[in-house]
Image (tube, rainbow, N blue to C red; front, side, top):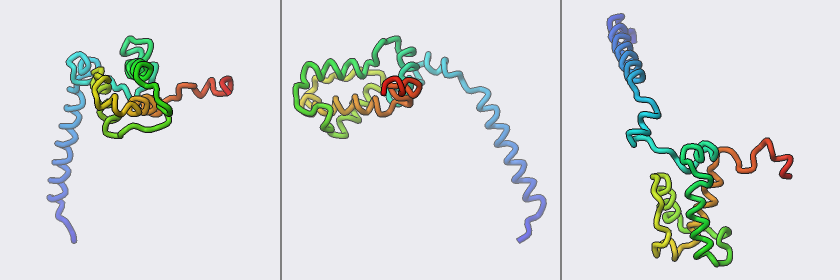
Length: 143
């Protein structure tokens, strides 16, 4: 089927309007810093570079690890605390709360009854680091 040249000009004209709109949209976009100030953009906890996360949060140790280890030291006198997995839905609830910049109440019955979810959350944090804790550059010295 042959299309008439007027049809192609119409498509080209619509395409040009779309490109113009997208360019103006991208130029008017607020900066990352402004989005953080307004509370629209939050720093991630999981999957974020450790050095960057500590710099942004102002902590020496990530809050997720501090909260979880304190809880495990107090309530986690159980065999295989880091070996056994917790219930996935509990792990995801905890992850979501830490990613929402909240410190969850780990003393809730749901977490006390499933203490392994707290240990699993710690393992998940380390697993999702984009760079290993024992860096590639220092791997030979560690081994």
